[in-house]
Image (cartoon, rainbow, N blue to C red):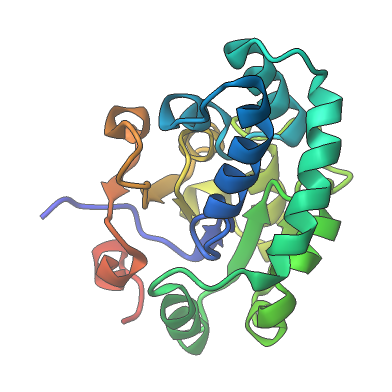
Length: 223
């Protein structure tokens, strides 16, 4: 068995990892680009996943050669998404894993590129669950100068938990998040969408099909 680093704290991405929201982004974006005869597929989505909103929008407009400004796309997308976010459900195994780690007194934080406003909408049905995390860091936190794949958000989360980066395990689903965790000097477990090109997340320490597969003992965590 592979020998993994000894871990003292866990950091979680949110969209597509803890909460099943990525299909909202896909549906809404397809709705917008279809007006221009375009298709939003995984070759494009994988370039946008986990990155700051404006950067992702610029990628979309450039790659699909859309006759709109990235800012206009984001304005329309936000209005449509805000109607969907409160419906978000937990990903398989997410609640069980985080509660197991809480009972074992492992410090845990959420580190999401979402703004505080979007975070609040997405967690509408899960306020009690998210209140159990030791820290929540959103993408608009004042100490975050650069979004993923820069390491800023994970370094801020580690600081809030009072642990050094090398003792943190990051759970991610996106290539940009894996890159950010690596840049922060942290270990990373990736749970990618099966439709994604798996080579994009090859730098992760461990790849799982679902959080249900995670074995805490692999990382010297209490089971």
